[in-house]
Length: 113
Length: 121
Image (tube, rainbow over all chains, first blue to last red; front, side, top):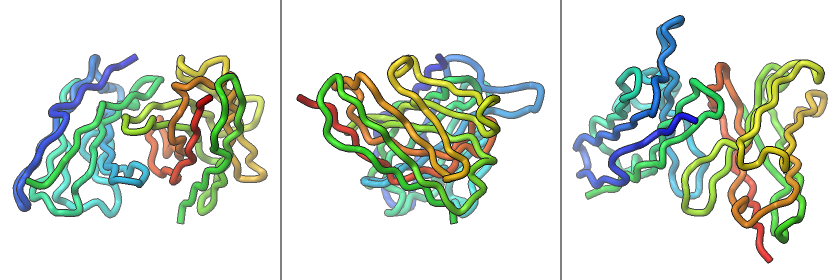
């Protein structure tokens, strides 16, 4: 199975400041045949199911604010919240869907400093 | 609007069985692969099983190693319904179980609100 490792486990950021979450996969999730990275980011707020934010490593899902951006390729990926808002407090998960079983990172909890 | 509504969760003793259901609406159910993903209390997300679209004789079904041989996924396209039969339940199966739509190439997009399964004596 592909192991997904996120860092940090938690971070506290001031309102309006940048939050950066890293995700590393134990093997590449890039397919050269279609030039795509099979990496998604989800946001989960307390008491709610996860919500898809980013797919193909950098494509924002419909309705997701543009302060959320994804980058990276191969085995190293980053989710950036450019200007943290109060409503962004949540746990964020990366997930690879390159290989069955699809696997998730352990999650990163984002809080307000 | 895509809606996925799970039901069937509850309290069950170790070794017992439970059948989860997911009612889908707002999209052409038969055209999408579907998944179950679970989350133990206070823990992360774990993929459980997936079933492809297509006719019953040609569907692809996958299971996590942790549930293989104990859980069975199925779907009824006529009823827009997904099911998960869970047998020989263990304490470690305690979790919120989510019904999740797959938009394609294993990418999951819509999640239900979940149904809670507690395995305890």
